[in-house]
Length: 292
Image (tube, rainbow, N blue to C red; front, side, top):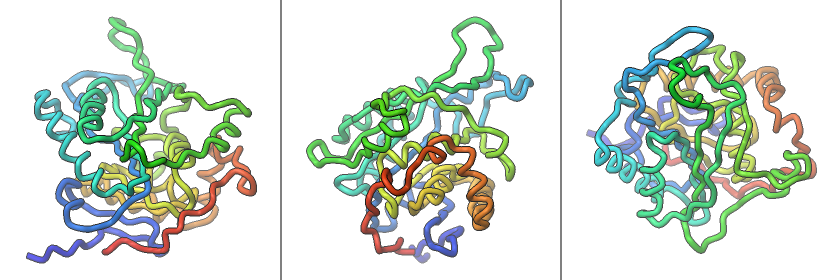
């Protein structure tokens, strides 16, 4: 059997590539270093519970990939994929991992075990959270995003000037008030754990330069990739689910039209405030391509 990797999709500009398969397999099969990794791994919260969406009671089960496992299994899973991501990250690169209390402590322990330096834990406060149906506890309205760099001593990139400018001239804190996904982000379909473009755009603006290479090992519908391409970054997304990979492809093909890109940008507050002449970092010197 050939070990050659065949992309599911590659954009005409070669700035958006999709692979279908398990990242724990695929990441071992090529040599490439990324500037930044964003990962939205399974939260392991699909346990038969209920939530509310669009005024309707719905089951929170996302799929078999999100089924609860034992603590040891969760820890082993997180350590395995983070080990591979570390190998694919440049020495001055950083990784961002989203989660809730279901998985974020396991992720943090794995990061520490592997020698990452945790820089921040962002608290994403959703301005439009679903209501608490049971009324037995406080309404869940936050998620967390860990930001860590690969090396204890090698400096990382942080666009402090831009983040301050986007926060009315004040230092940006680790609490971000941003909405969950809107209808305008679901016109081609919806992933059950889809993140909003506003969140990913801010992450990429904060910690990467134009032309940087971004990896998402659990890409879902590739919000990371769409955000990356909207602001001039390059992207590789990996997912095991063929339906989600196809949705990613359709979303990328949709923004081939300049008017569609402009329409998306108009919905993202940070991009409305961005002064390209004064606040965008110098481009990354990445004149190379993926090996497939």
